[in-house]
Every structure is written in C-alpha cells, then in structure tokens.
Image (tube, rainbow, N blue to C red; front, side):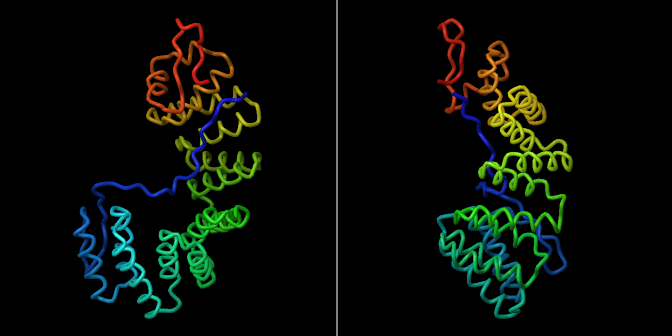
Length: 275
C-alpha cells in the first residue's frame, strides 16, 4: 500500500496572528497599524471620510484577528453596502461583500456577489480568485478550475494561484495538467518549495518514486522547516526501502514531531516509519 502523501492544498488559507502590521496610505500619510484597536479606529476614520471600500477592508483584517467578533463582520458588510450605494459599479465592493458572506458560511450569496464583481470588471483578478475559493467550498470544482484559469489569463505570473490550480486538478485526478501547473509555477518562481513538494506528490501518485524523492528533497533544501515535505520524503523513502536516509538526523527530527508518522527504532526489528 502506498504511504499517505500530504498535499499542500492551498496557500490562500487565512492565518491568525496576535499582531499584524498593515501599511496604508491615508490622508497623505503612511499609517502603520499593529493592533486591533488601531485597525478599528482607522476603519472608522475611513468611514467618516467616505472611503467605504478601505473601511470594509480594514474591518475584514480585524475580523481575521478576532474571528469570534461577529460585530466586526457585520460592520464590514455595512461598509461594503455603503460603498455599493455610493458607486454601484464598484466591483471591489461586491467582492468584499462576497468575502463577508463566505466567512459567514452563506456561500450562495458569496457566489452571487463574486460573479457580479467579475461581470462588472472582467479583468478583476482578485474577484476570480475569490470566486474560485468559494466554488471549491461549494463543491463545484470544475467551475473553480475555470475561475483560476481566467485569473491566470490576466496574469500568468501568479505562481501561488498556479499552484492552487494544480492542487485542484490533482484532486480531480487530472495529474498531467496538475504537473504542468506546478512546473510552470517553478519556472516562474524556482525557489517556491511548495510547488516542488506538490510536484513530488504527483510523481508519487504516478508511481515515479525516484522523481518524487528528488522533488521532496528539493523542497526541503529550499525550505528546511517544511514539515509536510519531510513527511512526504520519509514516506517515499520508506516505500523505496531506503531506511538509512529515513534515519538521518534532520529527517528523523522532523518525523518525530509529526502526529502523522510513527517512528520505529532499527533495534525494534522494524525499520519503517508509519504503519
């Protein structure tokens, strides 16, 4: 049985941090905000000046720090609605409102707003990316592929989006197309470790174990803290029965930290990692 290979599904997942720094151009000055209170104050000032779009954007940034703060989410929706009332052709406002609906789990409303945004502005790359993410959440993978493809038509150098498209194609078992996406992402950004690891996943799925090993090794060489790539490398080395490299100090240190893998000592009579 082939070992479990971990694929990096998306680089676009939101992460929470205790403090994030945002640099914004406001009233002719570069303003740096590093706390929730400052973000809320900035959003309020932008609201008072009629800059509803940026007010909404900063509300969303604040909500990503405090995801239990439903009041901020409602305020963000309010600012988006005001921006649309002020300018019904403002595609960004519809996309922002779609973000609010998506975060609230109202996928149908989110999709309607994203689609309206890209109809208003056919070259709106962020709108297509947001639409693709919502379509994935709704289970419409084929339409999500088309949304990513459209975004890349407007900017072929978006290597993270290219990798996300590859992940989606891999999930649809369209491995050759996924491989082409990862190769293009690497061509655009040769030090993009995630694409190297994802390409290794494709080679492993196609039974190309040695190519998989090469790409996982390249991924960890580019990013020595890339735990998933170490896990993937350990698994394919196990399959190839190259146990001496599994027990190398660096790889073993990462494997021992991973709940996905169980280390068996060479002295135990079982030189494998995992079950």
